[in-house]
Each structure stands twice: as structure tokens, then as C-alpha cells.
Image 1 (cartoon, rainbow over the protein chains, first blue to last red):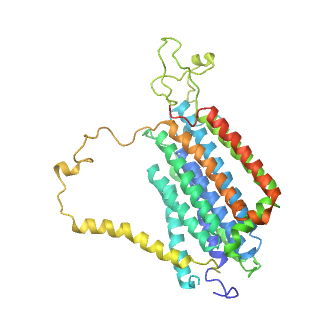
Image 2: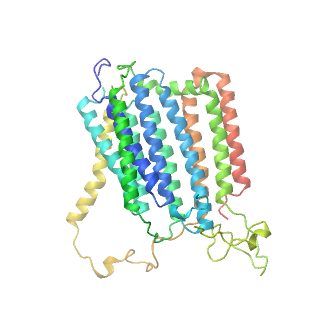
Length: 109
Length: 209
Length: 120
């Protein structure tokens, strides 16, 4: 396909998809009772951000692809965050014997 | 020879349907194990979207890191904490869910409005496609060199922190009875013996309201 | 704007490999005789009787191995573009990559010292 033809998928389709994924992640982050599900919602939000970065990288920055480099760094940070977050969760579970977010309320005002 | 535009549209529709329903399942399903496997499906469909955006290397990295490592880590963590517990009911839970759903819907509408009203500088330059991996390598060792080196420091810190948090050092023998303590790091039958002996007397943290 | 080459063959492989498990399961469902009672219901028809639930608590050592794997998996993601672009980058990039690897060797040494790599 020659590059000057219009793309069959508009940029806005990717942006709307990423917005759906991000809002689902935010809703899950607020409403989850299970601490593991909270971490999964954070991963969903990070993936939504990555889709945005990749779409902009291809559609607007096709030669320098700085968005792809950013995505690599976001993936790195997400992996580190998952490792440390789940270790914190295991430590919490060992002390409190629960993963219910409503019972982690020592700092609650 | 590349894929025709109709095929691309079909692929995009299938991938986005998997993505949307998978993420809804991750958030809504009551069984956390199903959520974890659906999360793997969401990561895979995101990798498919990256392929459609001419980024084969990032798609491979997504499969390697997210599906191969992060999802496995989440599954292991679920298997470590999978005690079946009945959650205490919260007053006003439904109201809370509806309110937060309304806030999220508002956020979604705002994002869609931004996406459609902004005047994007389209069409941009032609994507480089197969050269992308080499270009990423050049970026990593020229203008993104400092983040690249800091990434290794971040990984070092994450690993040390996670090992320290997930392990709990115990005495090799019980101080009272003298019999050997098994080194299973999560012990349910008795309070774990901390290396600091003063902590043995400390009661478990109570659930203070 | 899809400019990657060779992915039409990839799409064909993907469709065929997605069809294989579906066809295998459907054929099994259609062709097999239906006797779902007695011994047939056991998990292992000619083995130990399974006892307890499948939801057991795993040992935390599995988590340790997964943790070390995550860190070095991410390291691979960074080293692959370096290897692909090696000829264009030169000696300085080689030294920089050595610094990157040596910082992660410190992480490996720490994990080893802490016994995260031992099954015991």
C-alpha cells in the first residue's frame, strides 16, 4: 500500500479505545475490594497510556518514533511497579491476613 | 506485500472488542483468577494493536514483559493470597459504584471530545516500519541514554525492595523449644519469629476503626 | 498505514493456529462416546484419588523466581535494540551497555546472596 493513501483506521479510533481502557481502569481502581485487582487496574491504565503513545508515535512522529521509546520505558516502570506492589501486598497479607482494601485503614482520617 | 485495508479494519475491530470486553471482565468478574487470565488476553490484544501500528519490536516487548512476566507474577501473587474470605458489606456500596461510574463516564466523554476537537497534524511523516528496532537502539544510546542507565538502577532498586519485602528472615531454630523452624516464609500456624526479638511480644495490628 | 512486511503470512499462521484447538475440542465433543458417570468423573481415572481443593496456598519461592525473571526479562528488552543496532553505534555504546549490564549484575549478586535463587 502506498504511504500517501489515507489510513483505513483513523487516529481517533485508537484514542477512543485508549480512553475506554483508561476509564475502565479508573473505575476498577476505585471500586475493587481485592488488592490484587487494584494492581491489575493500574496495569490497565498504563496500557491505555501506552496505546496513546504508540498511536501518536505512528501517526504524528513516524520517522523519529519517540513514542515507542517512551513505551519501552513505561513497560519497564510498570514491571518494576508490579514487582514491588505485589511484594508490598504479600507483606500486608502476612500481617493482616486479608486482601480486602476496606480493612487497610490504619491511615484513614 | 502488506495486509489490505479491509483486513486491517477487521483485525482492529476484533482486537478492540477483545480489549474492551476483556478489561470489563478484569474489573467486574467476581473470581480473581478469571480476571488475571483475562488480563493476559487484554495484554495480548494490546500487543496486536502495536503490530497494527507498525511497531513489531514493542509488540514483542509487550508479550515478553506483560504476558510472560507481569501476568505470571500476578498469578503467583493470587495463588499466595487466595484464602477465601467473605467480605463485610459496606453501606452505600451501590451509590458509591454509580457515582464513580458517572465520574468515569464524564472523564471518558472529556477524552473523546479532546480526541475529536483537536486539530491533529495529520498526515504525519511516513512510518519507518521494519527499521524501527534500529531506530529505538539509536535513541537509547544517544538522546535517551540517561533514562536507559537509570532504568537499570530502577530495576536494581525494584528487585532489592521486592526481595526484602517478600522475604521474612526467621530464626533457623525456635528460641523457646529449640526445634528447627521450617523456612516457609509465610507461616500461618504461629506468629513468625522476627530477627528482632523485641518484636515477638508485639501483638498483631488490630483492625482499628 | 501498515508498512511492516511479511505480516500477511503471520495473519495466516495466526488464523490456522487459532483454529487448531477449536477444531480439536469440537471434534472431541462430537465424536467421543458420552458416558459421564462413575469412574469417568474422576480427575485421574487410574491414579491416586485427589483430595482437598485445587485452591491451595503456593510457596513464596515461586514468587521469588518470578521476581528475578521479571527483572532480567526487562533487561532483555533493552539489550535487543542494542544488539540490532550494534554496527551503527560503536565503542561508546558498547561501554554504556556494559555499565547497564554491570548494574544488573549487582542485582543478580544481591538475589544470589539473599538466597532468592535457591530452592533449598
